[in-house]
Length: 562
Image (tube, rainbow, N blue to C red; front, side, top):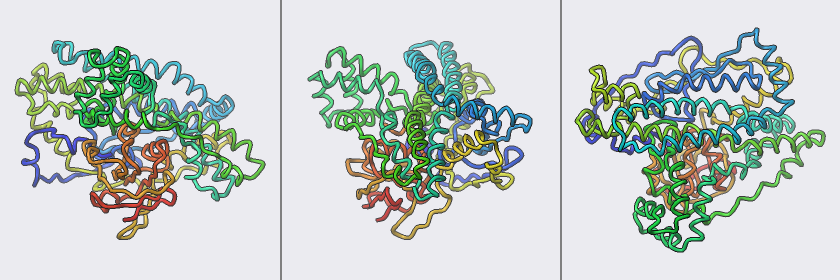
């Protein structure tokens, strides 16, 4: 997906004011070394809020992951240049290499990822959900301004903690996956292709197709409630009114109303795409939530893939190791999406709700032209506005930030700043355990991206064969969540990129094509969980394919033709 703000009327008048506006961008490296732009997660400028909170939280989370798994790097540093995220890996102090080698040995010996998964299930995820619910239950429109300021601060601190948490579990989400992929490619000399390996993980991440206990409780309650079933079957009903009816004890049975309220309190506040507060929450797009329910009600449980076709091509002496590594990868695979969905994707939505509440108050007294402008302020700036502080930004300053986000994209900026990228040191020089964990991490990281250039012609695009199958359907160019209203059964979503939170919206598609992303990008994972063909990393799909074009998506061979 792209910047949701492209489709939202963040200000009532910006269209007329900015048609001829041009901003000349200057890109200087934010520090020494080489800095690479992040195309896969968000292809438009971040808001000031996210640019303020993300670098420190990202660094803290990655430092813990790298240390725990013996990776010879201190952490991942991110900085923002004109709102775009550039990153670099910081090497570890050579004096620490011995300790890192020991950590890698311990991580492999204890299967640290299993301990992390247990910590996620027993501690981190339940605590995050409890805090999400606590903050979501605050009536932001009813509290006095001093309480709203306190709530803004609480949401800010919670969001930072959730970004740290997301990246704290990177090791468990990435090492077993990469270990399987790198090992199979090595054992077979590349005769087994990476997409074949990743296809063996399908069905192991229910969250990637929107499945969660709260939605399951809703579906079970509706199935036992005749009135609720009748409501959900009414395709002509207004989506917002229908959701209100499903959580009303006057219109459905009390267990149904309670289950729907419980689901919406958690899932409804999740942003639908991206990693920023300018993205709409699910509750702001009730049609997406209803589509998720309706598709889930009709969906069958996906079968577990048969690994024999891959296993038979692995040398016999490595087959036991293959079985073990496949089992470990399937065990932890759900963390790839869960850690984001239950951490920052939900925290950011709750943060957005608080910011919009502040924006509504500021708009009502004439300090902002639109409540939506609040998402382009930092929390400190919103507090200053609420306190009527003279140093607070003006409505026009925030509008200029919003205009900038709406009119710039990642394809117009340099991919690298500073020194040219240098290859990592030869892994074979590392001690065996460190070499294995590092190779696994690099394999996963590489599989999140596509090659920078893909061969194509006038009527065909090539990309990464992300999810097998073939489908011909109408292309729907999706630049924002609002564009999903045009997507019907059998249609093909063509978009720039997606994040894990987009899984609620993917249910309506029969195939997906992206400009950016790789085999382990979130669009690929979600497509495999839904069992629909996907070709990702085409670089040019959104610019070469016209809305409404009949396209054929070949997710087995990585081709899109029309």
